Length: 227
Image 1 (cartoon, rainbow, N blue to C red):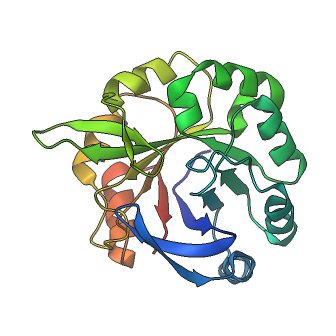
Image 2 (image 1 turned 120 degrees about the vertical axis):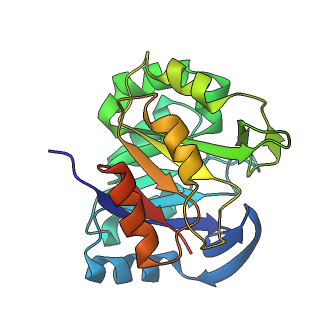
């Protein structure tokens, strides 16, 4: 039975844990392995780790770090960053992660989802949608730490995802990232009726009330938080 989940999201850059604001100015805040140990004690539902450097620099996933994270983690682990194909996903799962997150790779070629589903199972595929408000209204998908504006409408893209088999969609608000002023409820309201896949909201959580309000308004949803 599905229920709301609390999901810390750790952003990795140059092997270290960083905090960003609107996907910019990543400031070092500590060792990711120490953060995992802390969240083990807090008994959170899941942990999401995203290497924000990998895709931008065209690097493969940091398999050595994944191995260390999985060895420390006492909750389901989702890892993303640099995943280009099903072989990458298979190796990540073999190292102990339960889920593999993809973003730009899926936006550029939906076939990767079909291949990953065959290799690791659709339930282990998490599609992360980094979404930004457009200047004159509406939203669009972005990639490469929001440096690449795709012009793709997230509603239309989710409708494409509905025709495939995945485990979850993460709705990541670029505009709210790191501000700690609450989630983009307008964006979540726009997208929640477009799919039956489990949704996780990311970007903007700053207080316990933000998590409570998210779950109160949207029911069964993943409440992810970084800062």
